[in-house]
Length: 202
Image (cartoon, rainbow, N blue to C red; front, top):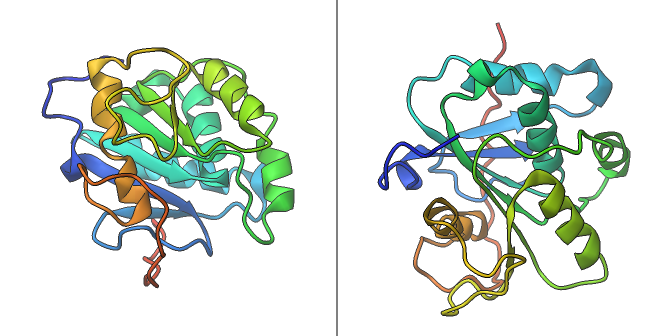
């Protein structure tokens, strides 16, 4: 799905997706708190449907950890009409599993192995699972960025040069680290944040 214009990917259109119980990176950004306790029930997918299927304004999804897997699964299996508002996705450390999330991650990992239907960026720090993250980025058709290199002139990526859409998505990565676009993307202390209420389902 092509981005409408150069101004469309920006902080005004960011929507953070988290798992219930995870801290919210930026309380000022609209947040959807997914209930993945019973992954196979699909309640979490209905939450994403409710948030995006009839949305008229553009949206850029920001997710971290297991939430990335849920977003990718939903995007790959949803009717394309549900995704018309989605301009792109920023997926940080998709194989990082939080405390008590092992069962949820195990259920979410065998998702569809198809490209995401919108521009996307996968970011991750170097580590023992980096090859698996790179393979996941390839499956999703995502541009890979090595975490910690975003401020460098030529970030380490699977593909040498990001597209314009991907470059604008990369600029939003700091929002998942309590920073503003343009700041160096480096690990830092995480301040306490108040959790936002999850999206409701009628």
